[in-house]
Amino acid sequence: MVIYVHNGITVPMQMVILTLIPIQYMYLLNMILTNLILGIVFGIAVQVDLEVGFQLIISSIPHSVFEIFAYCILATVLFEMNQAIRVNIINIFKKDKAQVSLVKSFLKTMKAYIVFVMPLIIVAAFLETYLADTLLYLL
Image (tube, rainbow, N blue to C red; front, side, top):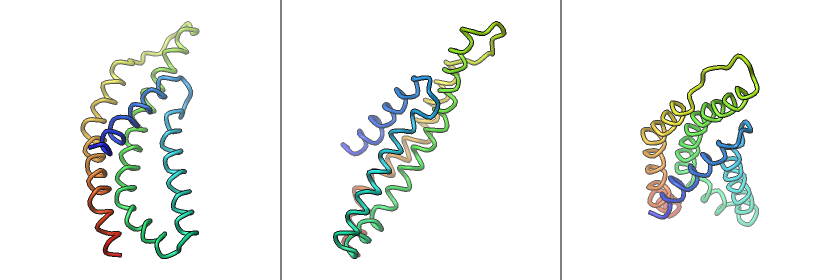
């Protein structure tokens, strides 16, 4: 449950908060840093012991793929939401204003989160909890 709360609620909420900042791709920082740290940990594990390092990498691949895919789906809808925010800010200074609905963009983001991201994060949490340990034990 703790894994789902962190990966399914805390991280997406951080991405949504970063989306509210009208700087393009700022919401990707969380995902980039997560994968960067994961790569560093894998590198350290391989340097310490090659066999154990590869076992850790192989056992965590299913979880990582599902989690990263879920965050990528979220990032695509957050791109549109961030674009709507930036267009609305630009419209303040323009005479001929573009019609972009922030509410529709937010509802689209919530719909994608509930329909696509949450189920993938739940699957990733189960894979991390059960399959990763089983694969590590089998290797």
